Image (cartoon, rainbow, N blue to C red; front, side, top):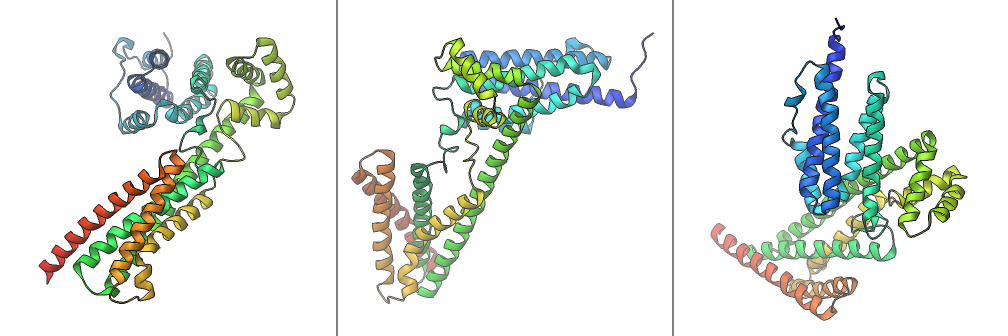
Amino acid sequence: MSEQPSQKRKKQYKDYLNAELEAAATYQAMADVEKDTARSAIFLKLVDAELRHAKRWAEKLSLDPNDIRVPKKNIKISVLTKAAEILGTNRVIPWLLKGEDQDIIAYEADPEAQDIALEEREHAEVLRTMPLDRPAFSIMSSEIGHRFSGTGDNIRPIVMGVNDGLVSNFTLVMGVAGGTDNAAFVMLAGISGLLAGACSMAAGEYISVRSQRDLYEYQIGIEAAELEEFPEDERDELILIYELKGLSHEDASNIADKIMMDPKVTLDTMAREELGLDPDRLGSPVGAATSSFTAFFVGALIPILPYLLGIGSRTLILSAILSITALAIVGSAISIISGKNMWVGAVRMMAVGGVAATITFIIGNLVGVTIS
C-alpha cells in the first residue's frame, strides 16, 4: 500500500495543478489569437504539454486525469489575450516567459519534478526563439520599444506631446471662453488644464517606461543566470541565431565560440540577438516623464499665452489664431516624420483642431447661457 501524501504535499500538488492549467489556458488563448498557423501550432503543442503535466499532478491528488481540460480564461489571461490581439503575441511573450521561469524555479527545487523542470526549460527556449521568426531580429524595433533609442524616435513623442497639449488646452479654452467673458476664468481653466495634463502625461510615461525597463532588466537577469548555469545551451542558441541570419553552421559556431570567451560580451550579445534589447538603452523613466511633461506644457501654453500677457478685448481671437497656426506647424511636423505631404498634414490638423474647438465653444456658449 502506497504512502499517502501529507496535507502540505497535497497543497503543493494542487498549486502545481492550478499553475499548469492556467498555463494551458494561456497558451490556448495565444493560439486562438495568433494569425500565423505555424506559430499557432507551437502554442497548441505547449497546451498539450501543460495538460500532460497537469494530469500527472491530478493523479497525485487521486483525481481522474481524463477529467483534465483547458479551463476558461481568468482575468489575467483575458488581459494578456487583449494585449496579444492589439500588439501581437510577440509582445506578451516576456510575460509568458516570466510564468515559465517561476515554474522552473519551483520544479527544480522538487525532487519529484526534475523531468518536468527540464521540459519547462525547453518551453522557455521555444518561447524565446519565437520572436526570431520576425524579419528583423529585434523586439524593440517597434514603435514602443524604440521610443527613446535614437534621435528620430525622440522627436516623434515630443511632437505628439506638444500636439496633445495644444489640442486639449485649445478646446478647453474655447469651451470656457464660449461660456463666459471673464478672461480670468478662462486663464484659470487653461492653467489648470495645462498643469493637470502635463502631470498626467508625465506620470503615465514614467510608469510605462519604468515598467518596461523593469521587464527588460528581468529578462536580461534571467539570461545572465542561464549563461552561468547552462553555457552550452546558450552557445547553441547563438549558433541558431547566426544560422537564421544566413551563416553556415561552421561560421556560426566560430562566432559563437569567440563571443562565449568573454561573459560580458556574451550577455550583451544574447540580450541584443536573442531578446532584441540594447542593455545601454533600456529607456529612462525620469527622462521620459520630463520630456512628456515639457512637451505637453509647451503645447498647452500656446492657447493661454494671450491671456497670460493680458492682451485685452482681442485675447480670444489672438488665442485662436496662435493655436490654429501652431496646429498647422505640428501637423506639418508629424507628416514630415511620417513621410507624408506636409501641407496635407497641416491642413488636416488645422481642420480637426478647429472643428473640435468650434464645437466646444458652441457647447460652452449654450451652457453659459443656460446658467445665466
